[in-house]
Length: 345
Image (spheres, rainbow, N blue to C red):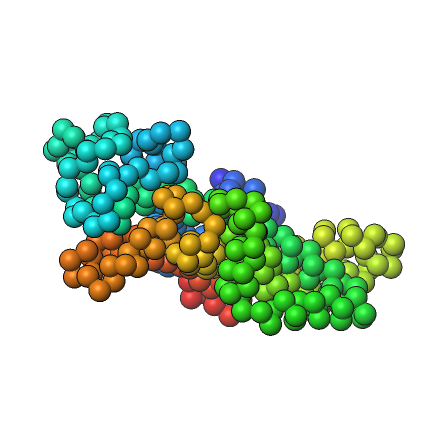
């Protein structure tokens, strides 16, 4: 641990200036990044958010150990028959039974598999769909968020940096796309792509990416417009630094943090949109391990939820907790990075 101590014989200076130990981690990260990390570790919202997200990460990583896959496709929810009526929690599992994992007997006290959370319409096991659907949620949300963030940042950066006619033309395109209702436009595009590509997660993700980047472009453009006129940017232009280097090495690192906050909060929105499109029957095959798919199995039983409450409660609760975790992290990151909130985290 390094320590800053006044040198020389000035005892008054030594007594006046307080000393503080500087850890190796702070030296490695830098004072600002270290402050952000400390703020995230001390904020109750971020602790709760990270705990929820880490819980789902563990489920996604150890899905095979929690409930082993059945058949060649692990994302195909095994069916215990073909009856339409859902079966309650704890009923015996007769067909397409997974192997018994190491934890099952110790936790449940049973020798054979039962439907821990019941079955949905068509006898799809809800527990299996939730566990393996966690991987689907992470895959779809991360791919869509990173793709829309990358497109939006590059697009908005070019518009803001060059300005003038370039900015006007590019942002008018954004305006046209933004006029379209997001989820409805994604639904139409996914419905068009599904016959061409086939039923999978790809049509839905492509549709969400196609209409999801405009918000980032507007956000980053507003920040770059305020950064591009600063002295260090003007100095770089004077000495002949290339535009691409000025934009990506000097301007973006100082303007992208608010956009990253928006992206962290958007992960939950992507999961909700993906689940909504899956609920409407667009994209993935029937029986694919996806939370929206599980919720869609409850559509015909809404009037009987007093009896079949479990078919919508468990998938819905899982979706709520996943989205809540990312939103809490985004809120905490916003508070830590906002200068007006310093000292309050």
